[in-house]
Each structure stands twice: as structure tokens, then as C-alpha cells.
Image (cartoon, rainbow, N blue to C red; front, side, top):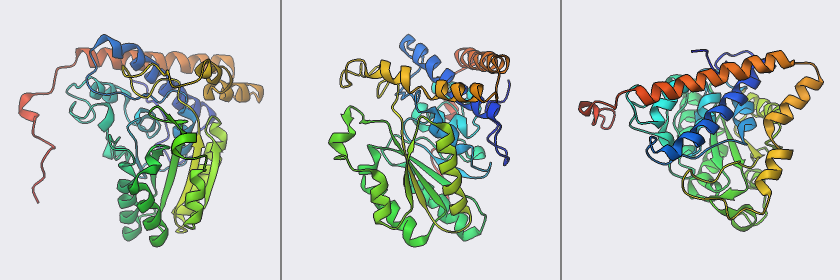
Length: 330
């Protein structure tokens, strides 16, 4: 299959490569949304469509050996870090050959070879994992950076507050990326955050923090470049609060978004679609033309189609593998 994003390389991704990441995430998520009601995908699935610019912008600044720890809404992070989308789709379908052998599903996708430490079903559960990876990198002097993605609901967990403190005290090479999509499941940020920027919490602990337009991949990439450079150069943690709302509900098959205002999602799709905003800019600046865009779109559609076909036809995991990768002997 055509390789999805080329963010695995240490060079600055080209405009075409950035677009391919954005389009791959969108196509993957929309196809999963279409397939989930058919009943072939077990477990819980949380979609990332609408927030693609955050994952694409942040991961564009990472090296292949850098780490990310994701959330329950982790497909976009995994794709942007370079995970194979066919292996991801196999994992969602619970099939042999999936990234975790078909035993993890959507909420536990991990690929250590890509530095993807895992999606996580526990709100803010990935944050301490990223902290551990950052501590390891600092002790080994490897120059690696860890990114902890966390949602606006997750920042109210104690693990997040404790991780901010520890990162500041130990000056760890970690970047906290708060993805504020407006809702903690169905509770608006005005209610569960009280109107306060999460960035202010980091600033209070001496951690540089910025609020970023999460619909603008260029703004996210620029902010991430500064934060990652600071961490890699030994100056400690930073926090980015990226604001971009999701298109779909909290979880597939669970809610109909009745908690959102009338026309809210339609307005976001029409006025704040990060991919359309990206295309408006790069075509106006003649960085991509219609033929290049169409070629990427077609290639991505084929990749996702092949991934779904492979997942449907793949065998279930062998029963003998049920307890492998579960227990570790020391």
C-alpha cells in the first residue's frame, strides 16, 4: 500500500505530505463512521474528524524515535505518527494482524516501533506514560521528546495535575497537547472548566503555555515547533491548548449529539473545517494545484478501501494467542 504520512522522517514535511496526513485521518474516520453500524467492529470507537490539524501539526515536528501517548480518541494521533492504516483497521475489527494482534481495539491501539505508546481508555491515562518516556529520554540523554495528548475532560483528572508538577520540577522533555473539543463527553467546557484556559494552569506552575487555533494546521505546527525545540534543547516542558471541535458524537453508537446547539455541527463543518481551510490557503498561495489534490484524495481513498477489505477478510486471532502479551515475567 502507499505509505500514509511521511512524518516518520526528520525533515520538515512538505505541504503535500501534510495534506496527505490530514486527508488520511479524515477518510479513515469517515469510513469507520460508515462501517461501525454494520456491527462488524467490536468495542467502543471515538472518532477524531474535525480535529485533524492538531495531530498533523504536532506530529510533523517529531522525529521517528519521539514518543506520543494518546487518548481514547486516538486514530488521528496514530496515523499522524506513521502507523500503518491497514494494521490499524485490522485492530479495530479485532482481527489477527492488527497492531495489537486484534486484542486491543480502537481504544488501545499502540505501535512502539513508531513511538506510539498507545490510545488509552482512561481519561488522562496516557499523560503519566508520556512523562515516563520523557524521564527515560532525559536519563539516557537520547534527545527524544514525548508528547502527551489529553482532552479537555482529562485535564480535570488528578494525574494531569500531578504530571504538570513533576514535569516542571524535573524539567522533562515533554509537551502537553490539550485538545479542547468543547465537550467532556456531553458536558460543555463552560461547565466543567468554568471558563478558564487550561494554559493558565500550566503557566501557574512555571510551564510556558499557549492557546492555539486547532483548526489551523499552520498555527499548530508553528506552536509545536517552538515547544518541541524547547523540550529537545533541555529547557523543559511546554503546553499547547488546541481548540477544535469534533464533527461526530463522543462515541459511535452512543450519542446523537443532542447536547449540542441547533446547527452547531453544520456551522463548524461549513466555517471551521480544518482541511478546507488548509486547501483554501495552499491553493491561493499556489503551493498545491487541483491535480495534486485529486491525486492524493484518490490514493488515500484506495488505501482506506484496501484497509477495510483486508480487515473484513482477515481471520480472528488464534485462541492460543489469548494470553500472549498479557503477562510479563521478570
